[in-house]
Length: 152
Picture 1: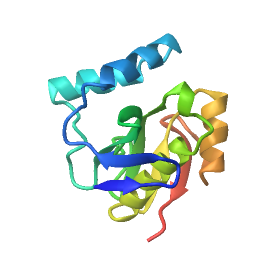
Picture 2: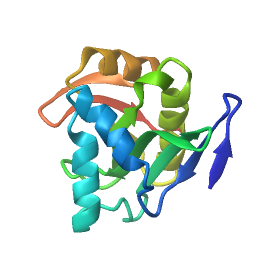
Picture 3: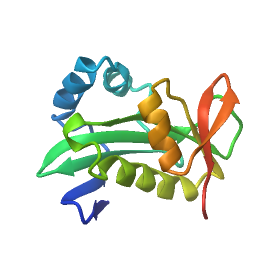
Picture 4: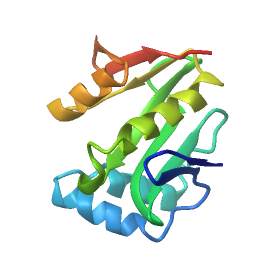
């Protein structure tokens, strides 16, 4: 899948991690985020490859460079029919340019094919505000901070 957007970037389903993931990881680590490192580690250990029914890993490319990544998995903290957004990261240079919103929307479109709702967890106020702009609502739960029903 290669979805071209009007903002000169494309979103692709990933079946392998691109070499450029290390550059994205370095940017994330510089900001104090370790979840891209966890994504790589889990991928290499084969403990999470976003390859179960309904799951996917998407990459956003701008001028052939990986600039964002995000995954959709079955929510391990709930029952069937609920997905979870995981490891969503957008390079600082592309924030505010619709790449993150397009990535989340594509993940939600994928989720609607398999799940009735999607949850996520973030501890960053900026990310919380971003997810509210993407149509999520806050939840009080020890395993999630935001949720959204899927449109089928």
